[in-house]
Image (tube, rainbow, N blue to C red; front, side, top):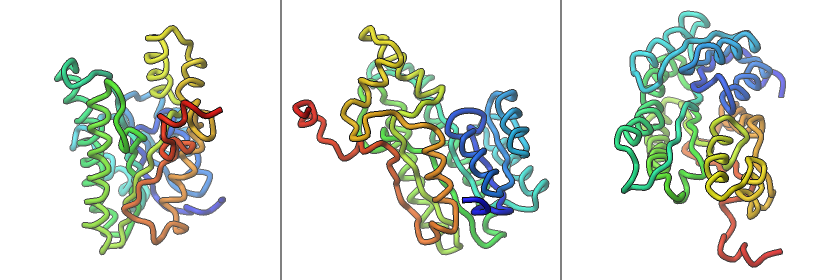
Length: 264
C-alpha cells in the first residue's frame, strides 16, 4: 500500500539479504526512510543504494554498534519510528554435541542482538511518543527442531523478550510483535535445507519439497511474503496489535504431523 509508512524512519538489522532486504524494499516503496545494518558491508550498501537509504556495517551483538545505528537514524532523519530486529544466525547441534562457542554465538546474535537493538531504539521512540518493533522469530520459536538446540532456544527466548517489551513499553505507545516464518528462500534458509537434504542425498530443491510436503500450502515462502506481514505490523493498520506472535508458515503450525503422514 503506497504511502503506508510515509516519512517513517526505520532501522532494519540483517538488512543486506533475504527477509531484511525484502523488508527494506517494501518499506521504501511505502514511503519510509530506511537504515540497514549487517556484518557484511557490500550487501547492505547495495540495498541502501537501491532503496535510497543509508547503511552501517556492524554486529548487533555489540551494544555500541546498536547505539551508533540508532544515533545514525536520528542524526540523518530526525528520529526513529520502526525497528525490525531481523539479524540472526543458525548452527546445528543437539545439547550433547553442540560446540559451546557456537552455542554462545547463536545466543549473542539471536537474543542479545534483539535486546541491544531494541534498547537503542527505545529512547528515540519514546521521544517520538511511540513506535513499532518487529522481532524475527521462527517456527522454531513455536516447537522443537531436531539437532538445532541453540537456534530453537534463542528463538523461543526471543518470543519472551518480545512479550516483555510489549508489556513494558505499550503504555508509551510502542508496539512490539514477532513474525515466525517457516522455510523461506533466503541464503540462510537454503543453507539449512542443503545441510539437511545432504544428509539423506537430496538436492536443495528436493529438500525444499520434502520439508514442506505437510504444509497446507505445500511450498516455501518468498522473502517478500514475510516482508508484507512485517509492513502490516509496523503500520497504523495494526495500531491495536501488540505482543502478538504471527506465524508466516504456510499453515505448518496447524498440522498434526503424525496424522499428516496418512493423508493423500
